[in-house]
Amino acid sequence: MDHRGSQRPRHPHGRVCGGGCEPARSGTAGGAVTSLSRFTEESARIALAHVVVVGDRLVHHWLQAHGAVETLSALLGGSLAGARSVRDERRLARYRQRLLAEEPSRLIDLALSRTAQVQARVVTPASAQWPANFDDLHERAPLAVWIRGRDAELSDDSLGVLNSPMVAVVGARAATHYGSTIAFDLSASLTQRGLAVVSGGAYGIDAAAHRGALAVGGLTIAVMASGIDQTYPAGHTSLFETIAAHGVLVTELPPGATPTRQGFLARNRLIAALGLGVVVVEAAARSGAISTVGRADELGREVMAVPGPVTSMLSAGTHALIRDGAVLVTSADEVVEAMAPLLSVAA
Image (cartoon, rainbow, N blue to C red):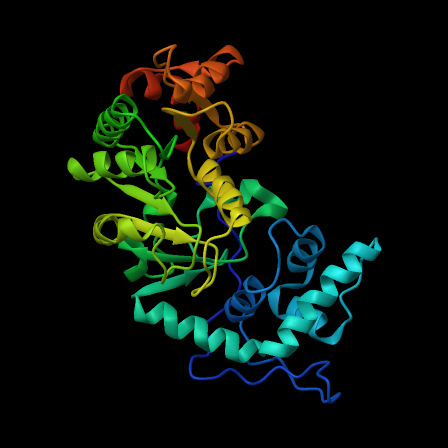
């Protein structure tokens, strides 16, 4: 499952052609054909990230077989083969229409400008900083990610924080004092044991987890459901700045993207993939944290839950997880013990 020990093939790519890639007119309304040769794999992935939905298997297979530049060219020219249904054809048509309307070169230059404004950078699978655990997502892996913080200044051959052993700590937004205290203390103790803490930057348990790690000088990663130049929720501007100074902010959405319900659900799979295990501190029977658990279980991650008062609806979800086989944990030592087999593989 963990790929840290393997060498990923590295595709030749430079920095994106800032200041204006050669316009891509393959298949434009005027019928003119222009070479895409000045686009790199990285810049093509930036363009694709603006239009391709999460989990598009057809586009993923094209990327694996032909690379991002050829995939972009095929989309623009209407020649991306392999559609198996009318739905596939309509989806590809929507991608093409948006690319033609907004121009890949313009999308790329705007994304790069906004990325630079917040001192962030783009990371693709060709970089050593690409989280190896994202490979476990297969066709649901991000096309690219934007990162801000400690890793943004590293060279492409440096592994960085996103390839550190991590544990996800998640839970309810409307957390109780009990839940927030547990999340804070647990995260602080986990980072003192050498694990980075990953969460979603939301109110409640997420925020307490990030703050607990930061309080003891530990590493924490916030996976955003918006563009790297956005802050959501707005009340966490200060927290996000602190995370950027001492940890990493990461998102698969291009700059300027605002949060959507679909974006939050998609974000949860990245949290699940980054962590070798996920701890649910507090959650109602139906919550975003439970969806994160579902993704973690699919990926073979360790699922853990903290028990709470039987009178609290915000512990109903964690109690259900424990009944269904999640490991009951009440301390960092118990989390590390539960994750020991996965940690030994990652070492």
